[in-house]
Image (tube, rainbow, N blue to C red; front, side, top):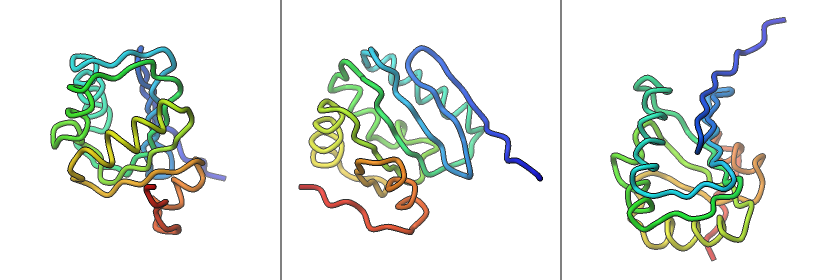
Length: 136
């Protein structure tokens, strides 16, 4: 039996792993994101992916804050480097507010993005097996 090797990267703010052609990006609990931190996360992602693009599942494990400059940066061409499609998984009230209001309503969409309440639904959507959850 041949098992697929999982590639991983981790720092103080984010854990990333590639599994079955999907990048899983976990924002760590207790993190406060400002523009400097956000740029470091994107640089780490670009370095980790080595110029490749992946669909990504983004999971918030308990971010404490994210300033406006960070939100704007993450939604920009530069902030989306290495991301071909994004599936956000809502896990907290903060992630619900952040994803639905700031990322999906206030920012111009540069890539396809969906919001889900389960990791399985997010993965299925990235694989084209499920419709995107509608934004209320």
